[in-house]
Length: 421
RNA sequence: GGAGAGGUGUCUGAGUGGUUGAAAGAGCCGGUCUCGAAAACCGGUGUAGGCUUUAUGUCUAUCGAGAGUUCGAAUCUCUCCCUCUCCGCCA
Image (cartoon, rainbow, N blue to C red; front, top):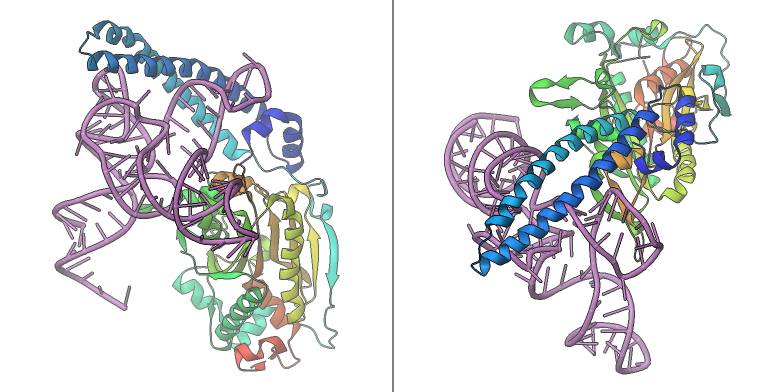
């Protein structure tokens, strides 16, 4: 969430930022509630002060065995008044807080303003689509023929969007996960295996709640949510903590399955591995000093891009426009890998800076060296990478005319085989 | 799941209704001492919010969370959460 003080002092900047994201604007209501809150606070604090002072006096009188009845009766009115103002305050604070939780983060000035996919800027392009003299097959055809992914049985067991990986398909997945994790470790990320179900506080901290409850699977009996991304449990590691400045940046990587309800229909995405309810992903999360978060965003992007380069896959990098950014981000890059079988780009990574937006919700701070008040850290995260579309692009990219798949060299030591089929 | 014990500041740990924001010790920061360090000694050291003459200022809140009793709650009552021990179940 945004800082109420910041909103109070820069209402126009906030309104403008929200507008760029294409969201509704209720800043005036927020400011009004904030004003009411502070007025009531002043009134009630005077009364509470009186209560404290008089109570002390009563204590003294009693100790001296004097009569305190007058003082006590005098407090009757104060007491009821405090109660009524406190009640009023509670209502206002609750509503103010709800508003604050629904105000999106405002975009960084370097982000292009727009709302269409064409407003996104391609800032880098790497590699090329392979030149082949036969018609490339989409991954679902290859996978089915090779019997490495079983979509139908996935449907039987769970439903659409829950594929079953078999044999070399399962091994390829495992190889990619290990490859991604090892590469992350080399770049200084500590590996985490987080819980796969989180409570409401954690989901609120990263911004999935209260707005996006529909995206998640919920175990209502236990009030737990299946993680839609490792970002949720991993960023919450340091909720309500004060880190030391010397610790920063704190860098974590985590492999988890991700569960998403993906309510609604997505047309061209329904086939194959393009959009699933359960998928695997390695996520990178950083907690950094506010002064360097945009440098850290660039290095995070490099961390993710390097993986695609090592796999030899053709990709490009997009700087997402204001309208294509999520609720919580100030700046976001997407990496899209080329699917030769489908002749389209597939998003495999999303790399974002949240500045202090999540940190404020989660109360994650650091203590500056020497003296000084704790400040909020900046949080960032990026997929490195989401598996299914990498798998899709990879088997399409490396397919042979016979319908086999050549495994890229960096994976050999993980797969133990060099060709699928 | 059943029975019992308990949750206090960065940590250990006192504190069962009235100068307790909270003893004591440790840690940390600053200082004295020292060529330097250690030890010793002295001083400081939570967080959030409000107000104003923005200050070695002041007020409010905060002892797991929430509600209640009371003039007054870390201390009493209720609900919830969590931890520990024993029993049961179990990968």
